[in-house]
Length: 111
Image (cartoon, rainbow, N blue to C red; front, side, top):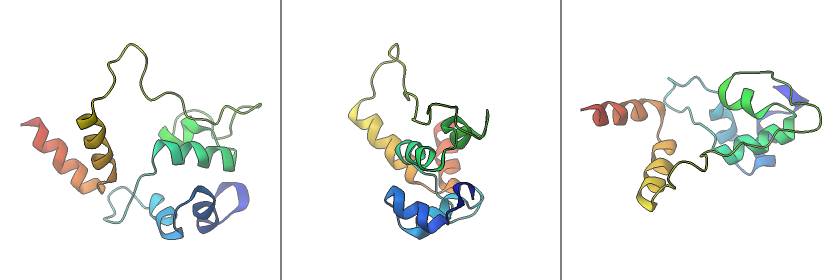
């Protein structure tokens, strides 16, 4: 792990259990795999000095740009309509699902 800290140490620093931090690095197909929220990713980027873009997408440079730049960009641009309460709830619940269940939801919505 970058920044010379254990997953457990990082988890404690971002406010999650060590088990949750360990689940973040499991392969997506693993039934216990979890994905950190954007807020947690931004905090991880700040703590470790890793670029938010690389951490969230795997694109770009791993190292954060000089002078910072590790905070998360806005998730939605101003030209998009704001999410409704139902959409926010759906998005929160979807993000909490394990990968296999996410795929099942996507398949259900394709019909």
